[in-house]
Length: 130
Image 1: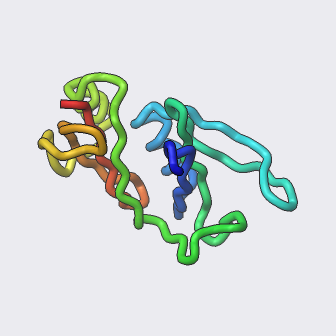
Image 2: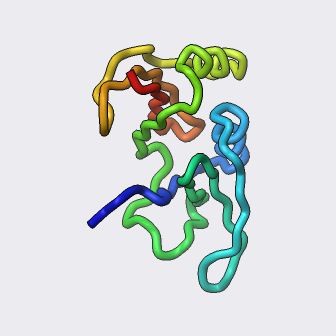
Image 3: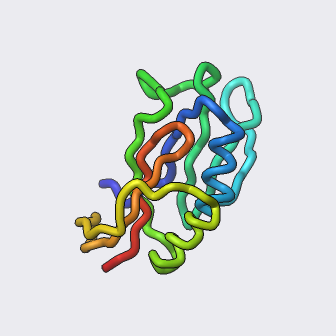
């Protein structure tokens, strides 16, 4: 019945810091679009064939999660480049790695991962297939 994930929603308390992390540090593309009723400008981070829609705490769009809060996500991304280059990019951005590289079990096979936290303290795992 389910084929793949199209998007998820991230709630932030600091829109500018969130946009900086997902675009500058992780290299995602910022997209603005019109959505909702009434129609309003919204933001999302695009990568591959997926996106992360952005909600700002207290200004969420309906419908929304029952208890949308910043810092409640634990996400794993498969990198488009080798993990050594991911680590170099994180270091160049002066973004601290809190764990790794370590071996983990991914959705389809073993992965090698590093962990960071975004500005809302969501746990972000960045991995390469092992």
